[in-house]
Image (tube, rainbow, N blue to C red; front, side, top):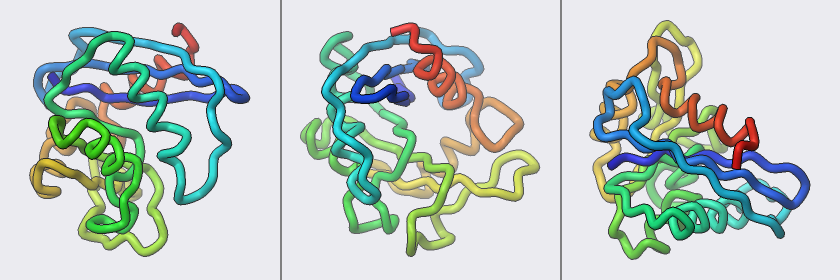
Length: 167
């Protein structure tokens, strides 16, 4: 199972969404999960993981999820290969048992163009980083996802679910 996760915040509360699918090219989710968490830390640039990591772990625990791959809205490595971001910290927290793919909409300072991925007719790239699988495989997987626009359908769906606060 592949699990795309996203989180929305209101004050110190979070609504966490997980959209599960079996194949990268799926157009529909096989399951959708949602959780809430209180006591969320403030956002600090470069330390996004402090805010988002507890949320993702809560979703996994609450629903007893054991995906093969987790797609996070953000970076695995902030610089693409060494400086740990949310995804690398999640990978470590899960003891390397789950491959992590990070898909970010904005670049982090210093990220190389090799992590850029253009989908559809978009002139703005996504930034794809990974741990557990080669970044080229991760980029090909995100490129193969359903949807003709910059953001794949199921990643946009995870965003919609968390923003709707159906947790």
